[in-house]
Length: 345
Image (cartoon, rainbow, N blue to C red):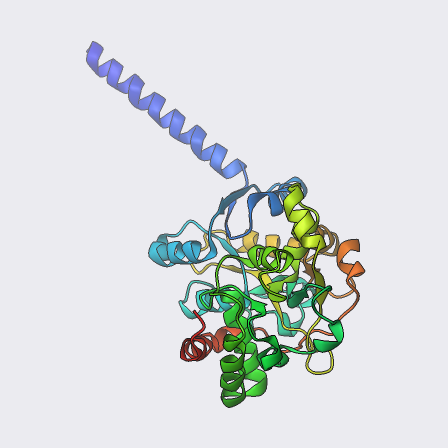
């Protein structure tokens, strides 16, 4: 009898605990889970502000964009991720093509991200804009000799150009943009001349290209502008000094405009909190969020009417390519093949 009473008490206690846990779960808003290729410091304060305003907690998982994409694919329908945030339209398009995202739309999303800076099928939305620019050593290069990307194939630049590898998505998207605008034949011809002008085998990241120009290893480099911004504001003295020795140039100003790309986000196909994920994207496209997000990342706001940081404004205004960034993903495979044929390592 004593054992029976003990079992009853234990069962009753277990039922009470289960009931309490259920009440707790129902009484608290579910967290939205974010897989982010952006560093924690570059996004966490914005997520905390979202939580403070909405009461919706955010769980953040950061990592390499390719690794997070592979993780989403491996997890499939069991993925805990609700929102995938990464750099480059090429990566977002890959997620869409692998059926890892779901379409979502709202007036706030449509108003925040211009049509050419979001998926044409509403699978993902741009959150910030980055430009692929030239940096050069002013003591060795006359800015008047620079014009557009295609001019970099001219023999005058033989052994004078630094760039990262063809495996980099930023370079792949640049070539994809050229394929969309100039066609395969012209792009192939440009690639042959461009690769012939490399000062060294492609290596390192964009910061390394800036350092190479500063060190005299090459005269011109192809980089994303926010890397230069980050180096100019770095706590590392050597990085600041290297960045101060180069000058930024906006290519293609007499033509279609400087090549741009985005960082962006999409709601995952497996999302258990799709509405909360949509709310978070809408929050990140608000004017105040855009202002903060762009300033911290040294990128340009995707939302019209929001001014960039003082540093970015100091570089002057520029004409941006209006190509729909979905094309950068659609033509990625063709771009990679063209780069391989040209011998871009």
